[in-house]
Amino acid sequence: MMVSYVIAKYIRLSLDDAVSDSMSIENQRLLLDEYILNLGIDDAEVIERVDNGYTGANFERPGIQELLELVRLGKVNCVIVKDFSRFGRDSIEVGYFIERVFPLFGVRFISVSDGFDSSESEDFTGGMEMAFKFLIHEQYSKDLSKKIGSAWRERALRGEAVSKNCVLGYMLDEKRRMVIDEPAAETVKMVFTLAAQGHSLMEIGKRLYAEKRATPGEYKAKTENPACHWRIFSIRAILLNEQYTGTYIAGKVRNTSVGGKQEQVPESEWIRIPEHHAPIVTRELFDKASAVVIRKSQTKRKREIGTYQRYGNPAHPLKRKTFCACCGHIMKINSTANPKFYCDFTRTAPDKPCHHLRIDAKKLSDTLYDILSEQTQAICEADNIKDCSGNADKHKEVSELDRQLYNLNDEKHTLYERLMLEEITAETYRSEKAGIEIQIKRLAQVKDALGKEAEKASFEKQAANERLRMAEMISEADTLTQELADMFIERVSVLPDMTIEVVWKHTDYISKATA
Image (cartoon, rainbow, N blue to C red; front, side, top):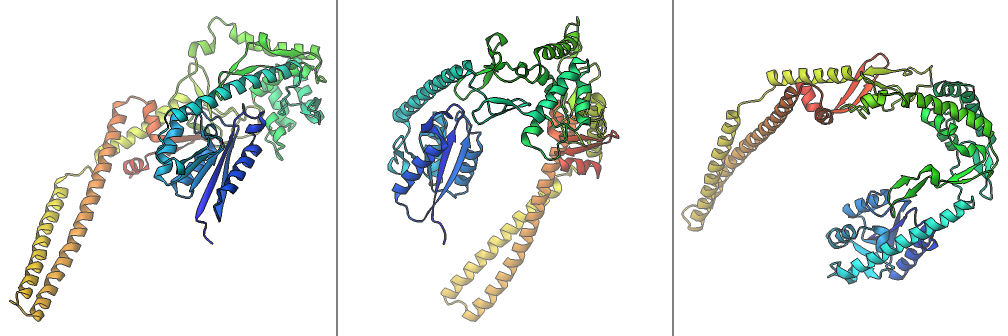
C-alpha cells in the first residue's frame, strides 16, 4: 500500500539545552507524537530527524539537511517541531523557509508550542507575531545559558563537574568519580618516567610505538588493531596535564555566546582542587618531567630570532592539497628557509615506508607548474581553435531548410484548399500530399543532423575557448599561484620514491594538452 501522507518530526538539542528536561530529545519526541496522534491523519507515515548537540544559529546540521533534501524531492507533506527555535534561531532564515520554501513544495509546517500551523495561516507573513516569539525564545535561551553556566561552575567548584571523557589513565565509576584505569595508567607512567630521564618527545613516541601502546583516541575507541602512531602534541599534553597528580582542573574554556564559539580562560582563573582523585604520578615526577618539556621548548622560543619568527607559518599553494600516498594523511609544511612537505603521522614509526618522508615544497610546485606550462604550450600549438566560418555555413543551411520546410507546409495547406474547392480529386490530393510529406520528412532529418553538428561545433568552440583562457592564465603566471592550484589541482599524493600522483580538476584540459 502506497503512503499518501508523510509527516517529518524534527528534533534539535543543543549543548546548552542538554540539562533542561523540557528540551530533552525524549520530551520533544513525546510532545510531537501526541500532537501527531491528535491530527487524526489516517495511514500517515511518520519519520524523524534529530540533531543532537548542534546550535540553531545556522542550518549546517546533518539532520536538518536530510530533512530539507526530502522536502526538495517531494517526499514530505508536513514538518512538525516543538517550537520555532528548534527549527532554527535565525528568524529571517526560518521565515524564508516557512513563507517561501515550504509553500513552494506544498509542505505544511507546524510549531506546536507556538500554536502555529501553516495550513491555518495562509496569509502568514511573519511580522511582529513571529519576531516577538523569536525574541522570547532568544531571551529564554540566554537566561537558560546563564543558569546552566552558573550551575556548572558551582558543580566545578565542588569538583563534581567531571566529564565522561576523562584523560587517558582515568575513567568514571558508577558514582561519576574519577578512578585510575590501570592499563592506560601504565602508559601514562611510562611517558612521565621517560621524560624525567631526559628522553625527547620523539624518542618517547618511538618507544610507545615499539611497545604497541594505543594512542588516547585509539584506547577510548577500543580499536582492535591500533596503529599506535603517537603525535608529539599528544605526548606533550599528557606531560603538562596537572590532573595526573590528583588535582582537579576545570574552567579552561568558556562560551562567548549562546551556541557560539569558546574562548580560552587565563590559567590564573582555572578552578583547581588538590587531592580530588587518586594520582597516577607523584608531584615530584610530574614537576621533573614537565620541567624537561618546558625547558626544551623554551630553548627555541628564547632565541633572539627563532625559526618560526623568521619564516612564520609558510603560505603555499599546495598546502592542504598534498597527501602522503602511504598513510593518506595531509602532509605538513615546516617553517624553514627551504620549506618541505613532510609526513607527520608516522614520525614515531620507523618501520613505516613513509617514515621521514619529505619533499621540497618549491620543487613540488615548480614541477606541477612545469606540467601545466607544457600542457599550455600543447594547447596553444595543437588545440583545434577552429574558424567559425564552417559553423556559420551550417547555420545558413539550417535557415535555408527552414525556408523550404515552410514552403512545403504552405503547399500542403494550398493542396487541401483546392480539395475543398473541388479543384482536384481526393485521389490526386492523397497522391500529391504523400509526395510533399516525404520531402518534409527528408528535409527535417537533414535539418536535425545539421543542427546537431552545429550544436556540437559550438560546444567544442566554447570548450576550446575555455582551454585557451586557462592557457593564457598559466602563461601569464611565473609560478604556481594559489589561483592556479585551486583551479587545476584537486590532490597531490607523494610516494616514498618521490613519485607524485596528481588528481586534476580539469581533465578535459589535461587530456587535450597531452593528446
